[in-house]
Image (cartoon, rainbow, N blue to C red):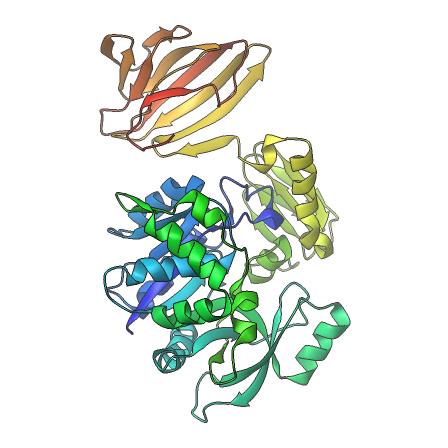
Length: 476
């Protein structure tokens, strides 16, 4: 199929806290299988067009995670569009359409959120094949999920007249969009048989989308065009201009365009492909493998006399006794315990953390950087201990600190250290001291990961006490 996959990789996944964090959200996690949700979405795009390198739209803070996960899949030369601020799906798709048209082509875009699960690849491809002629003919096509229950966590699409009589996925005109309903309304929708879950997946020719947006939301189009015109290009990254993009109205594709289209301009294709947006722990439980008691477990878990529960152990042994319809999730720095029926409310915990300035909403104890990662081991009054891993070829910025000194001890691998005017190598069991205010850099010139222990000491140990002089990753 002649399609350009456009993958929206923004979003925070707050309802999957504590596994999903603002700086490492659910689309980058391997929640189902060995690959992350983003990587699975890229793989689905390859089912539609083997030759098309996906175009990814993501938050600027996630750019290196996106690039690394694409590299791990063997995807090269991808265009990664960086949003300086979140502006919802309509501006994101507009930016993708402008980038796709910049070389003079006018591809059909298939826009897929990066945090969905689709188990039936054959059914997914069949629905895309059914939608393609409609998109090529100028319609904006969305995909409605055939409901399996009266779900209150999804919006619904009311289908209109059937547009085809062929076997396979049904194609309809759109009669209307409905907000997330209460339980009674959702049950009525499912009983009526004329409603589909709103998947948030779309197919549209780039020029058709831009024309529709220009007619219906001219201020949005003007702002995103200005952001694209003033964008900077850094390797595979397209950096949208912050001031112009911030000026764009924030709206979804449904609100901005779909709800205003004439019947002949839109269409919905039924998608029955074991889909889930994995929007909450209850959603993950529904698609996970379960034991005879209905429990979905991951990690070192002992579940005694438990039923229909989701139990995740990331770092420690977790034992549960007599739990029914519960969610228990353990990470290195947080534990969640909640009734499964209230899984949609986990975002309230994240709001509580945000209101108190707690870092647990932002990052895990292990924090990923383009050069590798660091993990907090201990912290106290005027000291902090971290475990640092630098990938082969990885290079931290040339930097200095105003408030802290650092002591580095190499555990394995080889470190190339810049300290003031000195450049030297350290190997296993060797160490060095970086005094406060001295310019320094850490690099891994070897072919295996560099592991070291860093002991920081000083009056202030925050990550914002970094003055960068040179950085190969072009961070501010």
